[in-house]
Length: 431
Image (cartoon, rainbow, N blue to C red; front, side, top):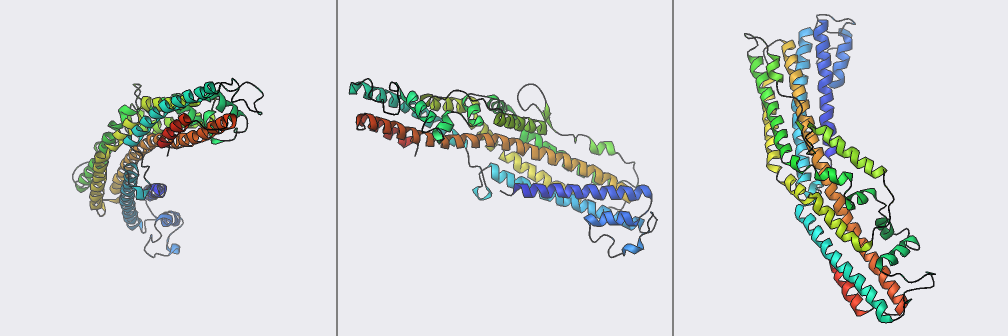
């Protein structure tokens, strides 16, 4: 997925706009052009000056080339704004493909139905695992030897159940296995999911914000379009009416929303940072608790999926696609209108003023849009974590079956038919 490349492109264009605005402001304030200003402009526009030799520019600002320089800077600024909006549209399109399942573009590919299926599968595995435990215990009783499963390695009475058997295994010969790492809950994110930890609760609390976010971001893009239109109207009328900058900048502040359902409104960026901070804290502040009983791991995982309502969260994200398409339309319309501002017949200082306003409006909208997608990305990352855990538990079941079967065969010399039946039933769910 090349989203990072496209995001860097947008930010690079924003930086170019900033530099050109800085030079244009300096030229206007100095009342003239000089070599230093020309060099700064050429860093962004290599053809600046249209072939004028650098020796032509004086060390101190002079009136020579003043008006021409401002016109060229203004043209560069509007071209960069147009390019930045176009780049943002490409970036949003990439994100939409990623979120909504274009596998060619690196889609996550996790759906609400897939998550529901995982929950049901682990409910069934929980039932079969309990049946496996019963078969294990009955096998010992049928043998009639209270120490039937004691081996030369144990030096103690036989394990009374599957959990004790696996506990012994992962503390000894299997201590470095995937089975051991999972049941020990070595992965702090796995631990958080299984025990409804801070990160899991934070994800769950966001469900109310998901439907609201795309609407808010689309409104932000519409405000940007309105700002561009207003700027165009005022520039065209600047020769006979006063400039009203306040009219243009009204309502372009960043979106604030109650992301976590706590009655506290904050910017989308703050919400993303909070989720990321919780995620990082959980990864580094892991408690090494007791081993998770194998016979309970399926029910714990299934209940966590249910409590988090992550399937509904993913479905709600899926329903936002229409709003995201509307967002793209608003940005494209804004870019079309900016093109009308490329050669306005007004003084360059007025042009720069409006370009500053447009640049700030674009920056606000860009931040809202990108942070909305980052927020969705955090939620989809949680879905991916669940998917990875589902795969990990498949490996755990296969390993546990091998250990249990090996110990039974070692102790009584054969594998009972009842065990084979349950083993095959479990295997059908973990293929």
